[in-house]
Image 1: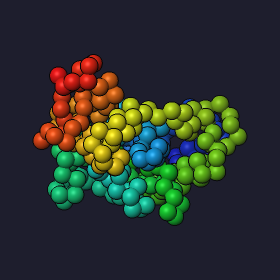
Image 2 (image 1 turned 180 degrees about the horizontal axis):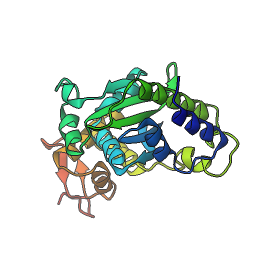
Image 3 (image 1 turned 90 degrees about the vertical axis):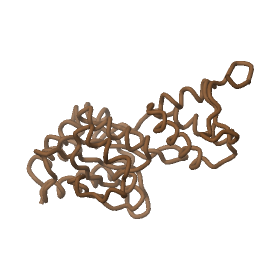
Image 4 (image 1 turned 90 degrees about the horizontal axis):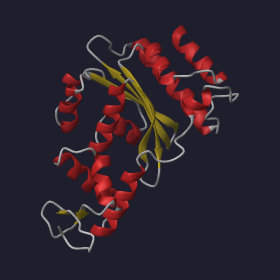
Length: 248
């Protein structure tokens, strides 16, 4: 049975009266952080809809840049991925993510896919810290929340029912891709290297990680032609791209 706090959130969600859904969900779940991402675009990349607090946004960006973590696994398998204590996770499971997660002071992550059957539309991520772990009640509440969000989006009711003020802001799908620059850069790299979009994204992620730069920043350089990927170079990148088309 869901808690009274989550029942209140779901009730407000149906009525469209939640002004800050991320904050309210985090409070109801007694979580260190909560975020919701939807799968959009040809590559089905996770686009953030809302996050609370800032740590959740940073963790989502980390998973997106690395392409690994409980979120991608939950989307791939269609089942919740529970890692409430990252110190107990096998090092080889998410080798790069684990060390960076500790730097963010994230001690645990639990992800719940949004979807029905083979249909995947997004993922709900719940963060834990040393003081706030995901117990049985929180798990039940998170599953109920994921189901409610899935129903809202699949039924074409992003306003959470009724369309009253507040609901639209809480559940409105991204009007445009916040990570559009990444998708555009991926397409350019795909053409430059003659590889699939999936392979191009892997190359882009690898370069961003190796250069310790945000994925969006590297993507902007690709689009501006300051950076060009080339199979003739060992690191797959030819460096700055000059206006006349030569290599800088």
